[in-house]
Image 1 (cartoon, rainbow, N blue to C red):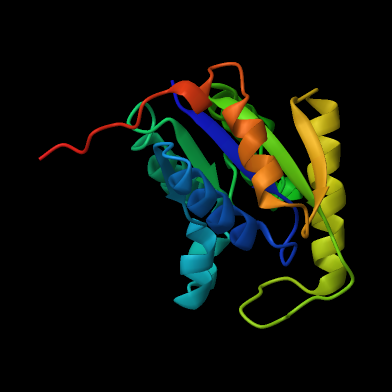
Image 2: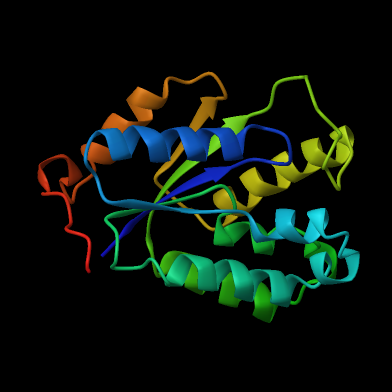
Length: 185
């Protein structure tokens, strides 16, 4: 089974940078890993505001991106964890949908890192304002607390990526000692 490393936080916390840095660090260590990018960001860059508001569509596409790596790599790294779909548009999202999101999220072996926000915020290529991003931070923490999701670690954007890589390597499955997967021809 693949370990999923989830970087959580509202917009602008540094999830994408942390995910890319961890991917690079694990590759250097010879660990088979895949990076699952944020589907909503693609929609934002396309100016597809209708699709970005459709949580089922966003969830299905994000889940598909993650599912295709399940069992094919040792570690899946994402800056758009599936559980976030239970946070965005939560007031208009049904409890049934939220339960589906939680079930799918829990079907993976997850290691979760919440990135604590700094006060700098770049509005460019962002759908949410700074105050909205802060509310999303709070909503994420509430979802984790309500659903008793663990393991869960709070880090800062400047947390050494090497330390996170070592947490992954020391995870119960013992990725540090696993041989590098051979690429199929």
